[in-house]
Length: 161
Image (cartoon, rainbow, N blue to C red; front, side):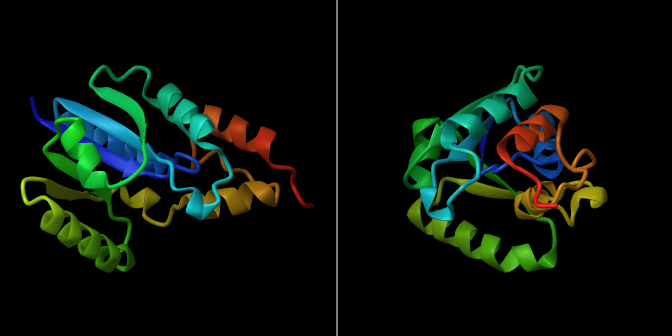
């Protein structure tokens, strides 16, 4: 079975993230969407909330498994018996950082491949940070996130205007 891990903080899950999940699900027998604990980023949604948002998004996808992880990604990949890490690249600016991560992961475990996937061009500008900022300012985030994520943002944030 070909398995891949799609890691991220997903704070919150955007349509760009979801697009990458859908594309990866076509290429792999099993895709684990691994929500990173990473409290250093000071997430808006706690780990359980982010996992719940991912679970709802992928509920109709039989080969996609939501999960959480903490620690070294390569160790988690081995634990889940996966062969690849899926990473989304929105723009050239993402490439240098992602390239460094991929090389470090390869150095830590040469048996794990990193696959870079680009979301649809309509999502290349999209980031969780931008979505949170628009939501905080009372803007419409419906073009950028799934309806249940939009609702969660509304409940979590109070518009400043």
